[in-house]
Length: 272
Image (cartoon, rainbow, N blue to C red; front, top):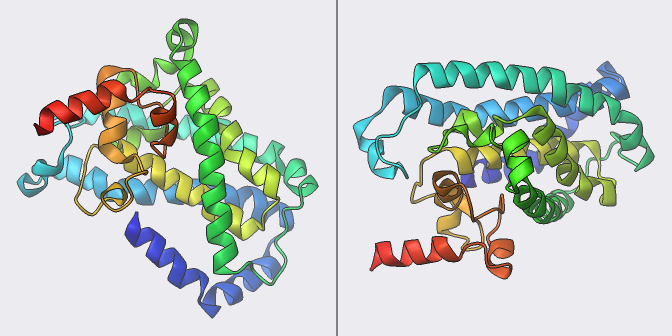
């Protein structure tokens, strides 16, 4: 995550981005850049984020086993194939139509592709705001998904793997993907950001989802530097015991509403 954020900062402050954006605006329609651009942001953020973890899971390099949250629990070939099929259906038959149908809404809230691009400061502040809004909304929807009816009929799909892996980050029931898309776009709905910022947001949100589902807790993970960022172990606990730690990004909501108590006790006892 830190590497990606640093790369984003360098890229955004570079004049090459402005030239590339001007080329895209001159080559493609507003609809194409909005709908297909957002879709490719989702796909790239997801699969580029998955790639290193996928290789670690397939190669099972002994050196990296020490960083597995649930030691020696790797996805099988059948798991990976099933997951890829589910992702293909979700991306092309759920997410892409959602983005296309939302195009009039993007225009109504003021999403524009015009130059100049927003400054790095604006992009960072807005994306952080989107993370805050998404985290709060996702927390309550996730808690609802763990009620008896919602879990039995919708959320059970995502919990098929008690030891999550990167490709399974978006492995879910189509209805769950639609529901959780609401808090993802709620922040942008309030702000009406530049299309470039929206591209960055969707890419970073996908990468964050992959990160917390990866199954690997490295010493350079973001939560090692920011205590309020949940990270892999925080979310892995949720999959392992099917409850608690409902927040998707930060630790604040679970702390405020007391849904991380069993996790804190377990972690305290382990570290004693």
